[in-house]
Length: 367
Ligand SMILES: O=C(O)CCC(=O)C(=O)O
Ligand SMILES: [Fe+2]
Image (cartoon, rainbow, N blue to C red; front, side, top):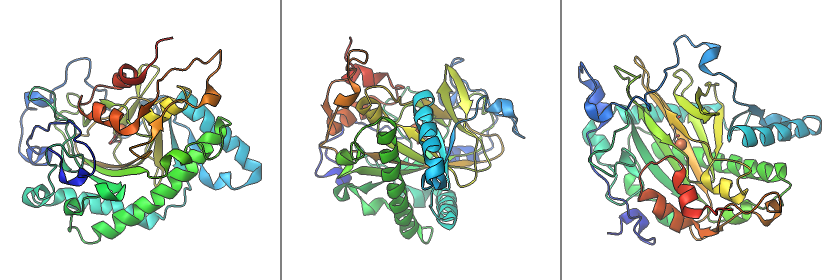
């Protein structure tokens, strides 16, 4: 079946299994966590302490000050920091990015209010079979798979033919205006960051921009209700983002995002009004593996709900994706074959969350 939001695109081949809303489950007086949410010993997370200690973060994720990029005397240093962050972490935070704080406050408020609506209201926007947007849980593709302690609302901004306004909540007030305004700002920042990332690799400044002409842009609101046993569950299973770049706004108060660094899970320190940026699988391919798309996950908190707001930014669906010829030489053999973005997307969504292994299975070249 071709879903409404993707009438001009092929079926994504993803079947959705409907599961109970975690928002509702978490409201019940549970004495134990239902089995379907309890992770195996290997997957169970270490939970950051409250109040937070430095050891919760191990090393600190690089923080890029965008206001310095405009100043000749600081620019080179910030560019070097971006290069180092992309090479060593695949992640960094940005501050002074120019997105009005009032807009960021509005997005957080709207997200919180949406998830507090009664279930019947949220279910008007439920994910439909085969679709990638709406209210629900991601990647539930089998009746036996472990479930995430979280719910989400996903909305595609562009291309315009994928934007499905019937799934845009009319409550809380101001939802549409704020989400649109925020996404316009995020797009500007994404364009700026991609040009800087190209610069760090001495690629032509429009190297990424060329592919992002008819960009795919999707916003997600993730809601992780408080959980009786954060040590047994995951808010969001470990995964790598299969897009170009992710720009994530996270909760100021509740720590939850963890990234895999040197085989350890490191929490990302919340910084007020900062955005967390990460390299997605497509940029890993386009940079011939120089910049890696790193696995990450979200953990929950016993007392407080946590919200996060990623915007996923990717090339147009029909773009051919492959390593930059400038980044292939004798010492850096070509690591990936070329493919069409939407073929990869379709393949990815048919698998469910499997870490990032599927990128190499799909497009990796064995040298
Ligand atoms: O909640 C978070 O901080 C992580 C969200 C995330 O990784 C995603 O939605 O892809
Ligand atoms: Fe992610």
